[in-house]
Image 1 (tube, rainbow, N blue to C red):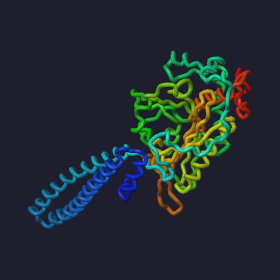
Image 2 (image 1 turned 180 degrees about the horizontal axis):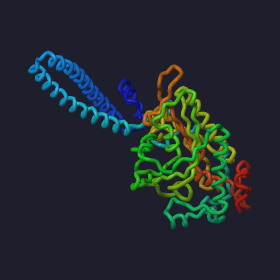
Image 3 (image 1 turned 90 degrees about the vertical axis):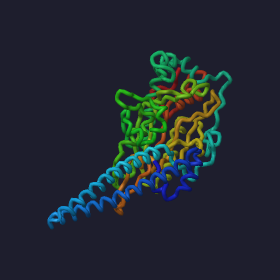
Image 4 (image 1 turned 120 degrees about the vertical axis):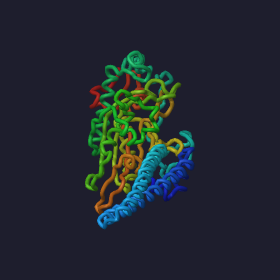
Length: 424
């Protein structure tokens, strides 16, 4: 969440930045926060002043009793009792105001980095670069859902039968392709210095608040009511929460983790041609990379993470472009995000397969994640994460773009992981 001190000291700048993100309640909520903070600080000051007076009176009462001045001591005790009643009232007020401030802070998104372009939605995102040439397939080329049926590698109807739409069943070489991609992505992350984590697939409410999925994405998460757990939408949530309430030393940095997990998203409101086949699922596999960095290093690291994702797509022989998200399309928690989209030759459209984001101090402030520098000062860290990579649309592009008359060709870099060169 945003730091209250930053809002207090730079309200106009914060409002302007939030408006770039098309946060409608920017001015209203920033002004409200400042008023609540002023009210809390005033109550806190009065509370401290009264407490000092009570402490002073308590000493005087003791002296009066020692001097045999019982009536004066009793009168002072009555005055002290009234002060204590006021103290109790003020303590409750301060506590209520702190809760109200915290709740409001949780509802305000991160401010975007200055390099985030203006724009209200995805149509105004900026394409940074394209790598590779767009494939042109024969007229009879098939979309991935037809290829999946032809080669009996993914069964959407069977998944619908046992669970529901958006939960496909992978079979034979389809299942092996999934496992190969997971191992390929983890192998490349490990070689890049990321320490692998196998995280839980459910998290508690505190973890959801820590990385910002709650309360913003509450409606998009699967909730296990009996135990008050949430199925994870990405491994980012449990992995980043490993460092909740942590004070790291400078020697511990940077933190580099990768993790494979199944991911669960309700995707409420999604429908139409854009969700057909593997284009949008409720359960899917993904390898995530997570970084925890000193603020001065985080934007260099963001570029490094983008280069890592790009190298994976190049090894898979997929044409892709990199998109800088505009203010209206960037996520609630992100300061700057680059999306990677691969070209689906059979569908003739771009499919998002990765988002790489810098959250600056936004998550760290929620997580109470700090480090102590060599100068002894304690500072908030920057958190970053990226999909490296989400499987469904990568699989869709691999099937479509690499289809031949003989079958579906497996990219050379992936063959040591699949154990086969073709799906036929």
